[in-house]
Image (cartoon, rainbow, N blue to C red; front, side, top):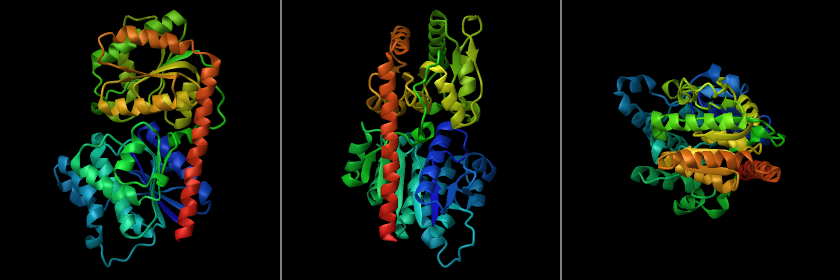
Length: 403
């Protein structure tokens, strides 16, 4: 059995993306212990760090040609190549070991997409590329699936057309939230029996964790363009968090998730805390693995975060998450998470005029949540984890019937 996994972060510089990929590879290997698993990734060495038994393949062929194009057109080329693949490589013999995603599609028995929030207008070029790979597999008669997906909003016309062509042909579609994704999937033509709400696949990596009993306040801010958070809003969050931590006698722990250069969370978190706030005792450690993030989240009693996966890793261990948002993309992500974990996940828009007061109240409320509420969140995560595993098993059964 050969399996190709496309995914959400080819550079492997986002711990959330890495956690979803690790979980996907782990769950697939449990279903097919002898399978060869190929993963679309930029660097073979980096992939080996996180998924030591997986084989890296490049995103697309024609990279030399793509480098000749202006940078704004490269995503267009990379996304449309899978649709041209039938003509461009017809009659070519496949190498013994695939080197690109297109070669890997031909070599694979099944093709899947690991979890992520990329089937949305904000990341439409990435979505187009992943859907293109799945479409090629479907045209070649290969079973396909998508796991742990956060889909939507999708208003961009061409992306809707592509999603409507690909999603209904999936064997299974696992969704990480049930507030927006299921209705959107059904409106795009996906059969109801193919859709299951599984929570985030990263929950697989937090198995057997008890309810956290930490005494720190976790902090994260995402200042990438798609998040819409400006330095002034981040500084205000940092000031309120620092004051709350001082009043509670608690240290602050950074929970960085993105490690992407200028958009790296650790630098953004450092910038939240202005000099002149000696009460803000902040632990600013880089977190290089999902396991690091899980351990850091377990040290917290509450978390203030602009990153989705900092919230996921906390909630799965019974740590309340106060999610700050200033974009429609994060509005949807955090609203879906809040629906799965009601009473312990709070969402605060950064554009509100009473932001500081609302944030103070939310931190106080989260800090003093009773033990049974925290335990209930952990139990919810365990139930979602079981559902996610069942969807992978459902896919295996369907594939083995088809092959």
